[in-house]
Image (cartoon, rainbow, N blue to C red; front, side, top):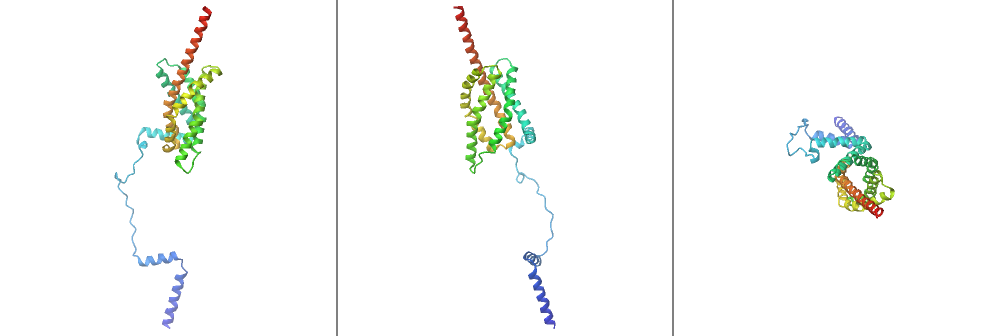
Length: 257
């Protein structure tokens, strides 16, 4: 009787084990085979130069880093307003720099024209570069970057330069024929010189600069570029003034003769 009762109890135990899922069986076996371990609290690692990750260089510039982070927050919250104000600052600085290069007295009217041009172009320029950031994204990174640079240089640069010089002449009171002459004189030269600068700037921006910082990065470069455009426009204005003076002198000579 004792042997039969023992075998019956053993069968019930085996049936219970077979009914359990495999995960519970493994945990039961491991709990039997392994001794119990008391959990130890996690030890905090003492920071040393070897285990503390280094921040990028641009995040360790103190006030400049905080200013850039504030600009990025403003760009994310109010992108159009931020872009508008940034364009005004860029065009103002560029015009002041260009007028200082000429060595003549400050002309606030020229600064006003530059601010109007920058205000009108700020939002379309921002929309263009945002569209370019989200377009032409192929599996090949080099192909994507090269396409963005080429499209920007072929489509955006001549249109923007024509707008810049045309608006400068138009706001100065020139006729439509004079506006067209200004565009023909300045745009080809500016386009050739832009190929020496902006492809590299565009490639660097799309490769290394986060999207919220691209506007300010391009804006810093644009201060120098807008200074060059303003200086080139001033040369064109002086050339037109010389031609007008020569025509006036020729008419006076005819009347005197």
